[in-house]
Image (cartoon, rainbow, N blue to C red; front, side, top):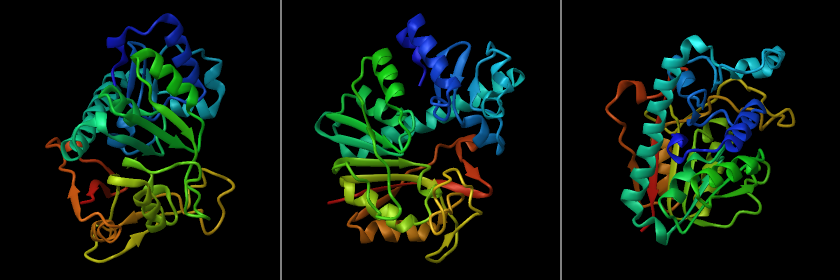
Length: 289
């Protein structure tokens, strides 16, 4: 999302820089200014941790922190970083458009993005005049939502809540008409329970974008535990490269009551046909009657 069209004020830009340095605006593709841009598109395409923030004027003292240094992209990669995140924005907007093609007028519907990060999808639905657009996450992104709403004049809502793999619920979140989830299922140790939870929150439609395996069977592949959250011990520690098969995804969504499952068509651009460690990303849109 290119926020330059909204002419963010100096105060907005200073707030965005502060939140980026704190690690609260990194993953999703936003352009705040010519010298401040974020997004994971470059890492997706390069398949390694190449940086999530373009900010060439950052204080060198701050870069003594290994955690922050890992987030800052080498200025020499600026053009590739920008182009990759431009392509990622195009893909994200393609998903928003695909959902609305199937569910209809957004002003009549409520939307929830689970694992929303900085709110790209709630903001996108809010900009399209959704009846209600919200996102929930285990990390508190409320300050980012406040900033983006102020810049764009939107009213997307942040809910500080997350999926609990021990109870298989998201406490404090009621059902919405449309539920979306992007690159979250691949970090859950109990992917079918997580998928079931998402389905229970979706009255009309559920969109899940995740990595899958291509076995011609009902299988799940697990990678080594990544350990992002120190409190998540066995059996909920497998938080990396969790890949259900394409066949399992479709059958599971059917069993949850989504009578029609649409594989969201990929854009005909090789750079946008993402994979991670050899596993392809696929989008599944389940529609109830």
